[in-house]
Amino acid sequence: MSTAVKSVPGGPFQEVLALLMAHALGGAESESDPFVLSRLVREYIAWALALYYQCDHCNHHHHRAIVALQKKEQEPQWPWEPVIAEVVLFTRARQSDVSSEEWRVWERQWSRLTHILSTENARIVTLILFAIGMARDDKDLVRLAFGSAAGMCADKTRLPGVVRDVFRVVVAMKAATTQFRMEADIKALLAKQHAESA
Image 1 (cartoon, helix red, strand yellow):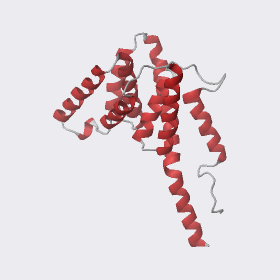
Image 2 (tube, one colour):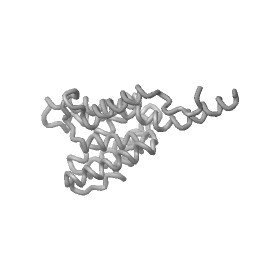
Image 3 (cartoon, one colour):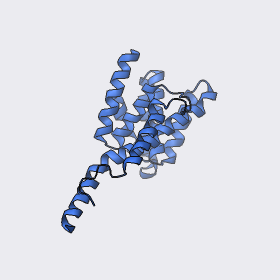
């Protein structure tokens, strides 16, 4: 075995992951289903997942993409970084791990957060909550966020497309954050094992 492992999952996997990211965020011409959510909203979701999974590589990548898209689309300024970080912090609590009194406090604080935001930004943070709930297979969080997201969707025919777009970002980001968080450690373990067996 070579000590210089280029990619733990392998080159062909890297190509598939790049294609998966294209389908989830940028689109693959003539192959992707049409997006319902804007690229900027999908990038907000991706950045939140990068924070949740503590992946520095993905954090920097999606942060840069958000800043560029905000400038390009001339999005009205809002405190997206601390607000999204607060949403990620909200998702660290699981309903099954806290008392009913604590969960009622959680729900009140969540309601407070969404009510101080504009309608569009409240929708974004709700989709982030939905995405993280899906990513960690938290059925309580998924149900809560889905109900809110459905309520905010004026055109109910768009809801399946919204869910599809969020789901694609979740699947792509889980794969990417796992790779970028773990690959250096796995390479170090492989190199150590190779050195010990040489």
